[in-house]
Image (tube, rainbow, N blue to C red; front, side):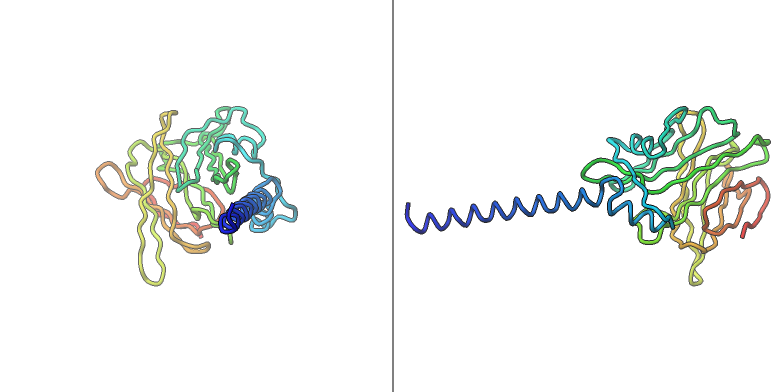
Length: 239
């Protein structure tokens, strides 16, 4: 073997070894970051204002990630899954709930090892006259330093005459109107959600419209972590 060929082979071997070491290092870092209780969980726990670090398990599917984090899948039914880039929003309801309306939204992120829960919440509304209410809603604010599609407002449509929902925000003198997405679930009801282009503390207004395009109700809120209802024919503010 000539000296030139030998030197060339040594360069190839050294390059392969360097690449292998780089791959192992990247994989190791990603595992340290994504493992339960790892760097990602530490960052999320800090953003949520927790004193201790959560240990969020890794699931094989978005639904599995939610079930493992919530620790109980008993009587929980997935009514819709909405892709957001490579991640997923999972809507669930408790089938054994005594609430007239209940809905849970969970945001799960995909990584190299599976799926992890990131952020979510839900509500339960007691027995009320459904003819008075257009919809129920819940706000989920953005977490500082965490890459998510929040802030978001979501809920259920309670009156069959509601055909359109919008969320309006005003910033720097400019009005922004965002259309809510309405989804018919396999439980023969509609859930809705809208991703807001606003920040925490920015007022937004939910408006609902009937099949003829007429506005039949509105409600103003702050982008905080709360829930409520919108009554037909009334315009109200929750500040």
